[in-house]
Length: 271
Image 1 (cartoon, rainbow, N blue to C red):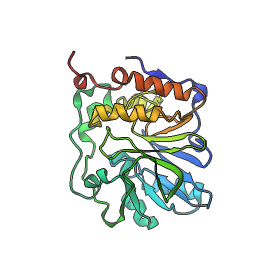
Image 2 (cartoon, one colour):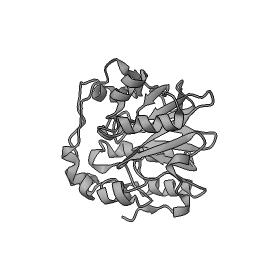
Image 3 (cartoon, rainbow, N blue to C red):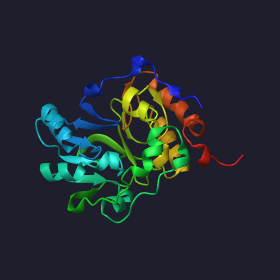
Image 4 (cartoon, rainbow, N blue to C red):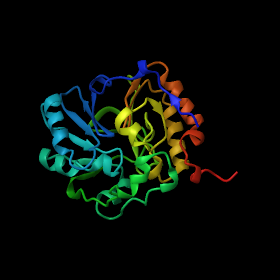
């Protein structure tokens, strides 16, 4: 079950992921700012509880203005917790796929974590993580439901519906330079291990955080779909961004070995 290793020379800094793309790491999760040619920008994801002040300070330093929107890859607590405070402060909408809306409008909470996923402290602590529901109230807007759609607030970026980790999980692809924002569709560090995810972040390809992934067949298909895009720059929700000529092949390896690398033993089909 060896992961796909990422050479150190393929790792890129968070403040220069790709043209117009920079990120902020908050403990074990990343948010990203996407600058647009007209001077506007978009915040991708909204991190963990009590991170709004840190995100706001980073945004003021790097973008000098409020974003045009907050766009969520999905609604898990480590990607959404500062969304309401930031949206109210900036007076901007929050976008998510319609299949995430029940978890973002106070209607449903995500399923209980899979404690049998193993892998480290993040899994063991997962029962303590908030599962919602949260309520973004009138700030919430719907992303398109079809893959390859575009979002007005994200010009030049294609939305890719990548379910599995959650039903409405989405990724974003800029075809011009083959930059891919993957949320939690897959990770570039071992997300189940606190030592790896929050401290060392050994660069290697893993599947989505296994303790909160709902549908492994869909998760596998989503990674296969992303591998077919041949991205050369990848910005994940967990782990370090990577870029280089070997990135497409590394992602193809993850897709072909997905069950071996990503799927927990208690979720693998019986032999």
